[in-house]
Image: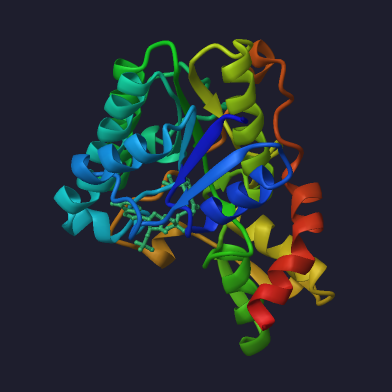
Length: 294
Ligand SMILES: NC(=O)c1ccc[n+]([C@@H]2O[C@H](COP(=O)([O-])OP(=O)(O)OC[C@H]3O[C@@H](n4cnc5c(N)ncnc54)[C@H](OP(=O)(O)O)[C@@H]3O)[C@@H](O)[C@H]2O)c1
């Protein structure tokens, strides 16, 4: 019998693509949405582990409302901190590997060269603090079988995201002002799902050391540059998009000015880092367009 993989947060944007990627493997998959397993509830997690006995857990569940976390940090911490802590304890008891998805928001965002996997953290937002708590719980509880994969600027067909918002806005606005002073790496959920599955397989094979990996695309751009590329793919004039600054779009949670992550650590697992963001967006685009216009 093949090893059982448990995907938590399975109904989320990333969770759906992890399930699709796992469907291509000879793997028994248990898809747990929030109704099936509340990751912060030890009773719920214990029951799921006892029933399914997973060898690998991919935690795609999270509180992802970045701005709301500023006023509801305790609630966000329950999902992003306590949740991974509870999952890690269950994984330790059952000898399972845990892949915890995390975020660029654990960094201060004021650097000017790509953050290394072992670089100093320093979150500036409540969301970042809660996600860092989750990382630490996993790494402390599972020093040999805990994996933290940080991602950023995520988009996929199965959820609301920046690409889908821009597709929608292109249809209703003649011109758009978009922030040009925040740098990052747009990342397709399909590419991240692939690396999560391969990392889990390498973990089971004993060929990937535990610890932190960075699951973002290669290259970098700003939200303005990202939007211009989306407009190009829509077949419309990218000059309809103009650059502006973060000061024009103040939100409750501070946004990192510099969110570019380094990818060196994949080499120790024998897995290549994710491709350049432009190539990924081009391949992803038809599915995002169909999802937005359906
Ligand atoms: N989206 C981004 O740009 C981005 C950037 C950096 C990192 N990330 C990370 O990437 C991961 C996946 O994000 P995503 O974009 O796929 O998020 P998403 O679409 O919001 O999915 C998160 C899922 O978690 C579920 N959930 C919430 N609380 C739960 C709980 N207590 N127990 C079980 N499930 C729970 C949610 O269910 P409900 O819908 O019912 O609440 C939702 O289905 C997260 O770890 C996130 O922090 C995302």
